[in-house]
Image 1 (tube, rainbow, N blue to C red):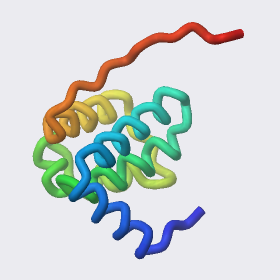
Image 2 (image 1 turned 180 degrees about the horizontal axis):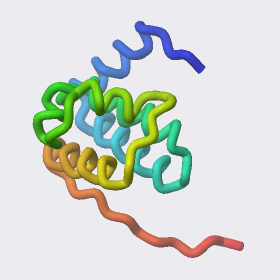
Image 3 (image 1 turned 45 degrees about the horizontal axis):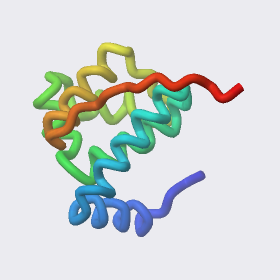
Image 4 (image 1 turned 90 degrees about the vertical axis):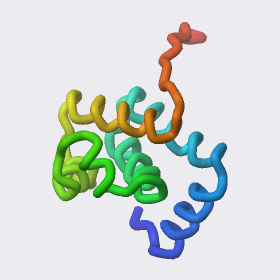
Length: 108
């Protein structure tokens, strides 16, 4: 599904003014990655990054070129675990949150 520019701008505007929405966006990105949906997780990370610090600043913080980060989080990108961890660490620091994982037993 291709998102329109207007939709992206709406998400960015909401994320910039609404801390809970912004943090929920980051949470959902991590949840999708952990659930194995790399495509959705990367798309949500791109939305979060574009709405907050931007790829240029993220590149400075993780020591990678912004274009490289954009490619690895793009639809055909394949980021390494090390790169994803570096990105998530920088995003946690930017948002002043700590990402934690809680294991739950399946109901089945």
